[in-house]
Length: 527
Image (cartoon, rainbow, N blue to C red):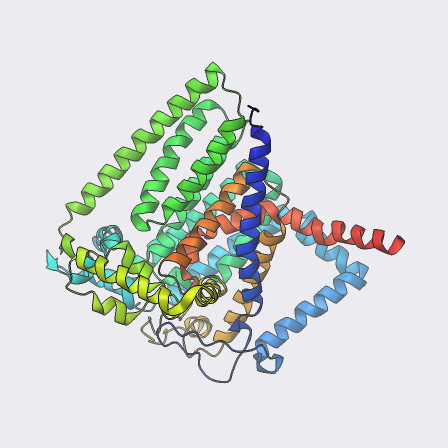
């Protein structure tokens, strides 16, 4: 019997991961390029619950500001290509002095975010608003069918109840949300610092664009609260995989990884997808690693700490949730996972009010039985090819929107006009009837297309760390296809994965278009 070539097996698995990732991200890239956010149809956006109207791209429907910006970009590109003095100045500022420029721009973006939050922080409705209202209430043990049905948001409620102890002003919750966002930004920079210091300017440039086009900072919810824990997990894994790092640091990192995964899970259970990706790639690495006595001992010690911290953190958080005295919980009516699977198979694959209301008051077992029947019926109604078409459309709904579903959940904010002129100006970019809303959508979509393009074409890097990031993104996209999705907002939780992957792949993508393809065409012309 032939001995299995482990290196060859790992090589094929890596190729398979890149192929699957390219398939998913390739579809996302195409749908993102064809998305509706580039246009202005002359009317306010359709913000009815889970609207899925798509319009064709027309230059005539761009706003004046978007046209001016597009013109500036085109002129800038032309000057960069044909005007040597202009090109040298741009390269001097953004390339030669990239260390200083990137830091200044990132700090400036953070300051602008703070100014934005201080001047524009409307009362948020829907889930985020419900949690804040409950946290602000002085009524103890308030009965609530909502929290009984969706117990996964109890941890967020407990956190915001603690914040309400500081003060009940809406701004406190928004500032805490912004603090979590800032923490994620810092950890993302630290992650790249550990992995490759030369790519620090890239991650700072990317995060500058992200911060300037991320209004979710004013929505205190799990989408943002999970970000620093995903970032912390990525930092911990970077420390564990970096050879130059001392064992004592790796020992601490194994505990940090466990803590980050558990805390992330209690905000959003999908944090476990990253953990699964780490396990898969780690097992692949262990297959080809030399199992010396010292290595075994170190692995055992780090593994023991990971399990201990994981178990302790999970136990403490679970006890906190079980013993909370904020609302009364009926555990018998919790919505089962199969319900979200059934919901994700109707309409645009997102939230469905009829499905949600039809389960109210039913036990978990009854809900599961109904959901299973609905899944079978919906699969039967769609047929094989119909379901494939549905999944393609759902992938578009799940990933194509560069605003991350901003306003797609309906009018989720109280539209009181900010008092300051600066606040009024800033709100005009994000409010449903804002004068510059379509300018924001245009810019956000453009940046999203670029980010997705970077990770799509940076396929040459198949190191363990980048493969973890790819697997995590694949896992989240598959999860959203199987369960409730329908809007790009669900991608926010894994934005650190996108940002760090784009930072690591940037040079490969740039080389592909500036060197590799040019050489390939040159060879063809010579032949």
